[in-house]
Amino acid sequence: MLKLEVNIPDRKYPIYIDKGIINRIGEEIRKIYNNKKIAIITDSNVEKLYGPQIENNLKKADFLTKKIIIEPGEKSKSFIVLQSVCDELLKFGLNRGDLVIAFGGGVVGDLGGFAASIILRGIPYIQIPTTLLSQIDSSIGGKVAINTIHGKNLIGSFYQPLAVFIDPDLLKSLDDKFLYDGMAEVIKYGAIRDEKLFYNLLKYESKEELFENIEEVIYKSCSIKKDIVEKDEKDKGERMLLNFGHTIGHGIEKYFKYERYTHGEAVAIGMAVITERSEELGITEKGTFNLLKNAINKYNLPHRMPPVNKNELINAIGLDKKNIGKDMHIILIEKIGKSFVKKIKIDDIEKYINI
Ligand SMILES: NC(=O)c1ccc[n+]([C@@H]2O[C@H](COP(=O)([O-])OP(=O)(O)OC[C@H]3O[C@@H](n4cnc5c(N)ncnc54)[C@H](O)[C@@H]3O)[C@@H](O)[C@H]2O)c1
Image (cartoon, rainbow, N blue to C red; front, top):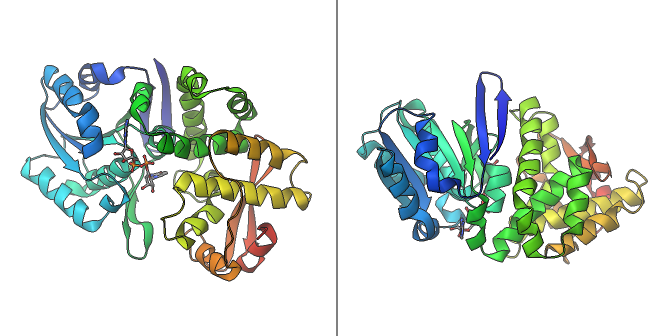
């Protein structure tokens, strides 16, 4: 079993990575939680695949469980679903020492974590992420949120879990679309921080070979996120590096009304577009764009900017909540494995996008 520990001011929690860990999840949770009640928040896809397995295992360890099952998909990160989840948690009679488990992808993690952060002014929760994206990204760092009509993730908290349990075996049932979606973030980690991880991604010959190495890929990715979050929990400095490809990516997602591209696809385009341009501007080492493009294409992700109306795209980017006032931050890479934050005027963003 691989283990990491996230150390942030006044909180410390473990991340366990182990194939098959959900088959002994009851005994693992017993080691860190002594009360009886556990509410498991999950979605109906994960429930069908693994729901009984996890619940039986928790019961074997003498926990009293209640499952709260939401519809799969982004639409569930809403006030209405949050309200019904909170209702169910309160009906179960949880008190402040009891536990919530968010068992699912990023949607369940964000919604479940947010519910845990507000119920009774906050009760402990554990993340058991089941998609690649949630295993390497959303379950770590404590950002939990729901969406509103004004945009994604605009209502939320920073609320760190008690622990994160990652079972890479769960990824075997994941649709390829979601697997590659998560790979965009892995490529990002390699590009911003870890040359070796990046070149390994280029080396793997097949999905099978990726899966043979998946524990290490997850471990490396989580280590990078953990290191960055430890230095900047509240997203004011170094954590911005994690937004490599995301400013343009979010713009693309929004421009196409979240219908044409998955998050990972949009981020892949964002990373490629900005790196192609920064290479032209002499900021990035020559050849970096090609390497990035190869990695992106290898994992079935797009790298080209689709035809768009430039002004509308820039509007979509400018409206992104991460841009405060008239300045904005973009993330550039000097070369594979080395990145930095650059502050620019919103009007200058055009310089960094080839449309
Ligand atoms: N909090 C953060 O720091 C953070 C970071 C990145 C992304 N996010 C959020 O994460 C969300 C996206 O997460 P996601 O990509 O995991 O999507 P998701 O939670 O919608 O899961 C994708 C699909 O996979 C299914 N699924 C989940 N686990 C499975 C498994 N093991 N086998 C088969 N199917 C499975 C789900 O039912 C769903 O249909 C977005 O809402 C995004 O905003 C949050």
